[in-house]
Picture 1 (cartoon, one colour):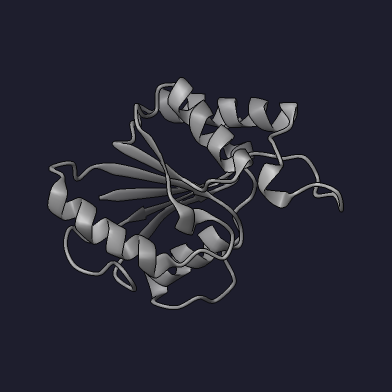
Picture 2: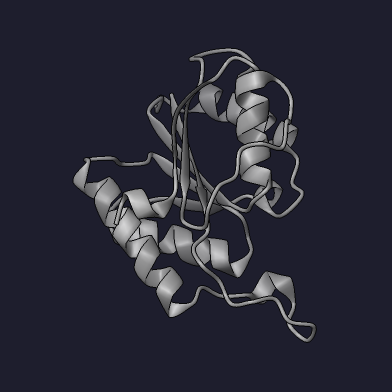
Length: 165
């Protein structure tokens, strides 16, 4: 199974009077995200499912991926919120694998440093704080077909959006 960790696009700046959960993508963020999505589509990538953080900027990013044709399914997943728990997702993955015949491509849309930390945990079994994912950037991992993916996954892609533009 291939897992793509996708950071949300460029969002409005955090301000004292703005709730972080309500920050939206900027026009530049929407444009870059569309360009990255089109490049992925041109490489004939299609996600069986996109799980997204419930924060607006991540949901908007996931919606763009869907609109470009990268998936027909989006689901919110609370653990993809900032400081979310990877183990909740691993439990979800185990159940999903039991209940679906789909074994192909899964995308998670979320936030940094969480996505970088999740990738490190899946590859090395621990967080090292070294993988940095730019806005609209992508980490690609190959997960083992069965069992716990922690420390057993392989990194095949780490790219910023400029490589797609």
